[in-house]
Image (cartoon, rainbow, N blue to C red):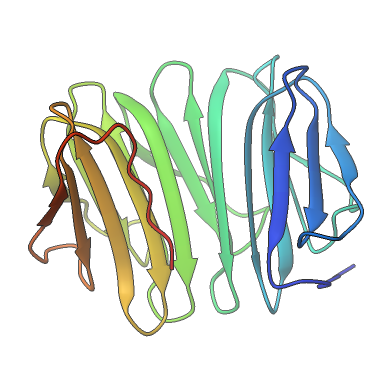
Length: 212
């Protein structure tokens, strides 16, 4: 069942591997899952919360609509990380990274068809909005950042080389927002289109984050 108590969620992963999520700042904590190594959360006003988790056994689970809903097992093993997002038009988007560096993604339903996206990946990110749909960002093991938006079968756009992280956000008015951190510690940001020009924001940076 759908339950929207707050426009945002708060989630934590304890040092003991237990995932907890609550609505807003003052909501009641819900113990979601144990033995978790990767946790991702999102929400939208139509579909409610979405939570993704990967356990120490490599199994990937997702739930949506209510913090107490039943988990859906998305993949049984060999998963390393998960990223989830949702928007009122496209619905849920789930991205999984295997321990071998392969990425699969699905959108529209937790029971939908997987799309094999890319190999040789070390990190994943996803966001989504009602205008552009899902925005996916990956960094390869060789340090090249790639992104795509909309249909999961759309072509990839090579964004940046020599980076350690690529973060993505999305807004239905302003479009996608991307942040990249180079191996030399310089942060770059672009907005509005995957092929737009990068703007150098700051040197001597250890972490870059974007939101919208």
